[in-house]
Length: 318
Image (tube, rainbow, N blue to C red):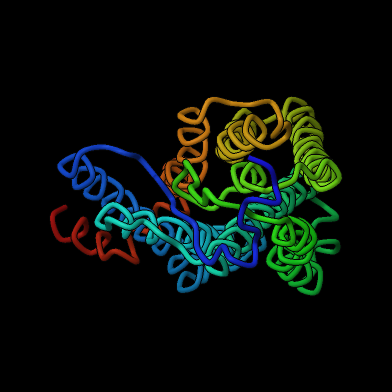
């Protein structure tokens, strides 16, 4: 069917998100599983945000960045999961053209911001461990406030161009997206014309952002590890390594799955694999991050127990 005989973007008012096609019973099971995951994600990350906000001992740059990162996770997961849950209970599974691109913009902007925050947290650990004497002078309130603002705004600025370029493509029927989110790769595949320029710009953007941020983080932690190995105290080594292991685990979870998916969108991953990888970094990673950060950090565990009221219970039963 040629382009002239197909409807263009002017008549495409909505898309159909197929999600995970299955029987009604399985759809209800999926709804229950992902509802539980979403609620636990909100609870875990909200607990960290509250702990950082209310515990004076955590009013340091490291925990301020962590608190912002956890709040960012809440925003990130909320851009996609509620709509996915609604589709499990819906027979139409439709999303308007505007809502689809709004989801696309916010989801990937928050995703970029996650990458920036992981860089900021790696930079903070580098300064704290490699330059401990100069850390208070360098990491001033003005600097970490500026980094917090940059971490939130960077993704929203950078992702304007890809969203505008892809939204201006001519879209034709069928308007069915075999995914559970408005992902740019299947969106570009629905275009009436193959726009190699847009695909090249989008791929180049992904490669520069992901490889650049990932290398920055790896270099930061490589210098941190070298500094830790030179520490004379075994206790200091354990403390520094514990913090670094937590951060690196989050980095590997996030960047590992995202790179497989988006550095080479033209590589043609099977649809089921695309959905699984997207599910991993959009749902599972935000669920795991609070556990990764809190279980290996004594201050955070103590603050979380205080927020949840568990510290008084422990004192009572001792």
